[in-house]
Length: 325
Image 1 (cartoon, rainbow, N blue to C red):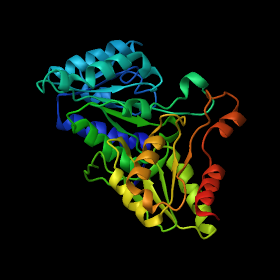
Image 2: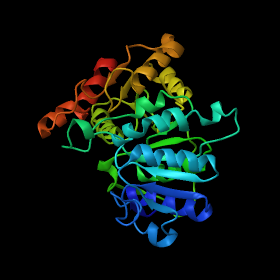
Image 3: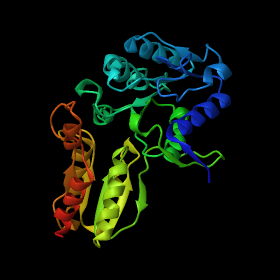
């Protein structure tokens, strides 16, 4: 099977869906003339024209609001944020308009929008450009939140997000846009709300999503070399969460470690830990352990970035803690 970059998989999904449905538009800063800040939309202006590939001012609140109005009028906007840190400027439109439109209109007006762009740390970008907001948006009824970890999943999930009649938060990583993976040429769609068992195992359930899957996969290799069998699960979607897949895995392994890039308080891992002990308490042979970023604003120094983020050593240590090895 061919291998393409993460950004190319996203671009293929956008192109295929825009060719399929003329009501789909893409808007955001530098998506048109500059071919996208991360070159995801490269070449799309030439094919679809300026009425469908729209460069916006640096005004996230404004163009997010325009997208909500456009969606209510029958279009299907895709809004690119240069980073989800900038989505804070538009969060009123996302939370108070897009997420609530269907409910507050009594089911008369949907809001089929995809808000997409990078989340989390991308290296030495400082505290204001390195935050994770998956748990913020996942806290909001009316939104779906998708965080893919590889090109194959990114393409299939983005196509599903674009076809969804609800507002979808689609979060990527600047550090993954150049990553390559196998992506088939034929069309496929991945269902939103389903976790994926990446590999089966018997000693511990290890759960993660997004960019952290790369660190987790390294840790799994190190653990297997020491004779520890890991059942690895990629959430892919953090709202709705696929509790059933997690619970069934824990019933088999009796142990769980959750790895997440966000801060620890009120995180996705907090929710998973709570629901697992609620639904599978009698199956647990050890306390659930979480590996998250440190509970401070991200420092700038490269050595401190490494100390701040979950890493292979911390993940391995957590698994050994619950398996007593």
